[in-house]
Image (cartoon, rainbow, N blue to C red; front, side, top):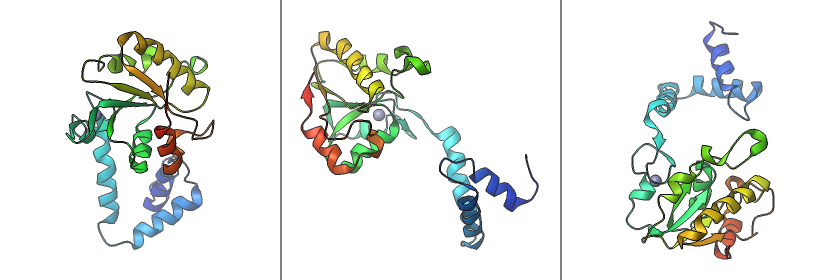
Length: 197
Ligand SMILES: [Zn+2]
C-alpha cells in the first residue's frame, strides 16, 4: 500500500530489494538521512540511469552502458577465447578471479524446460554467429547443476561440427555452486583444468 510519509515510503521501496528486510531497510533510510547532503539523490540518480542507459552488448550480450561493452572493446583481451556464462554476474566472478584474459558470451539463463526456458530464449544463436576463423576455443562455463550441464551439452553439440575447440570448466567448483558465488581461487582452478568436450 503506498504511503505519503517519505521515511515509510523509502523503507517500503528498499524492502523490495532481494535480501533486504524491514530492519535493514529502516537502517539504510536513517543512514541516508544522516549522510552528507545530496547522498540520497546521488544514489537515486545512479539507479534511474539503469532504466535507460543499460542494454545488451551487440557482441557478447552482456549488459552494458556502451556498445560494444568495455571487455569486447578492449584490444588487450584475447578474442580467440570465448567463455560462455549464464548471467552477467558470472562475468564479474571471472573478472574477480583475475585469471581470464579472453572474452565472454552471456546466455541470459540456462535451458530449464520445467521453468519454461527453451534454447531459443537464450542467446545461443548470437553465440553461433561468433564462431569463425578468429575464434579458437569456446569455454562452456555454465553453472555445475542439472540445467547448466544440460545447457553446456546442448551448446557443445551445436558447436562441435563448426570445427571450434569446445571445453567445459573442471569440477574445481562444487556441484550446485553457482558461478556467481564461486570463490576466485576455485574459479581460477576450474578454468585452468578445463577439459575438452
Ligand atoms: Zn561485449
